[in-house]
Amino acid sequence: MASQSSRASRFCSDAKKLLCSNGEKPILRTSTTKDNPGRRFWDCVYYEVQDGCDFFRWADPEPGGV
Image 1: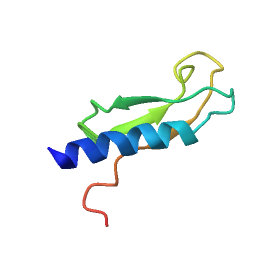
Image 2: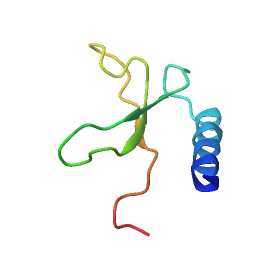
Image 3: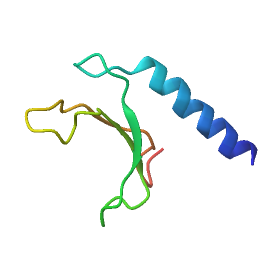
């Protein structure tokens, strides 16, 4: 339980530091792809909009990474 709490606070802390090129705070999402199932990432609210922001950053460490 403490691990989940510290992980959640880290995500909130990271979000406060991040801004996309539009000056927006990114949204924390969860990947549903075959290659990265369940992996969390940050992207801009305009990420999927045509001519939108291309901000993207993984929130979770790479699986198997240090």
